[in-house]
Image (cartoon, rainbow, N blue to C red; front, side, top):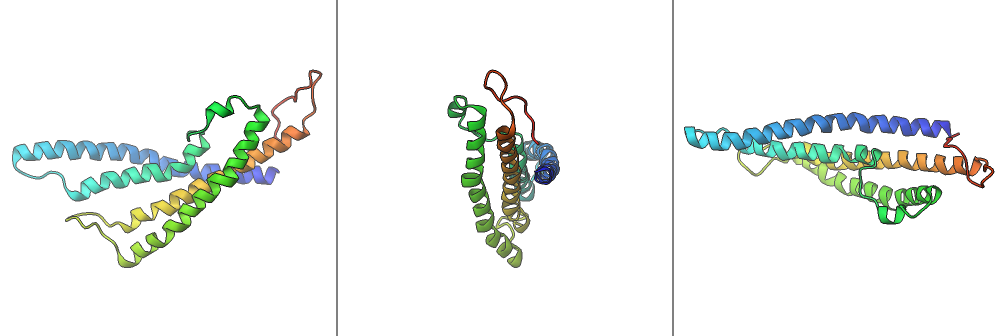
Length: 189
């Protein structure tokens, strides 16, 4: 089990590294957005265009980076939507079982499905060198590659979460009961 938990930690580290890129992309996106707004109005007053389609597209490409590269990290931090109304009524063991079941039945098939479906369009975009239809726009192929990458990272983090849930369930079944009939400790042996 320790080997599996070690794999989960490595997957956590991978998603954390991509989250750093996503974090910096937020700042760059905000700066670029500020420039696009200021440049539009300042450009009108001086009679020179200070923004471009490339800068505008760059802003939403950075948003794609934030969203898609942050999917796995958000799951790691338990930031995704959960059915808390139900979970708050369940015991810890039942919550962990549902977490494992939801990960295996819903999250992983969905993430892998999106990744597989988006792979061919991304490869096709690279083959044809797809570019923006707008004048001075950016290439589209690299941003389309973020879709399968983002969902791969989500799936890998789902594997890490499933490993931890399995280890927690296994540890709960091995823990002795105390004098009140409750399981003690939070060990993960």
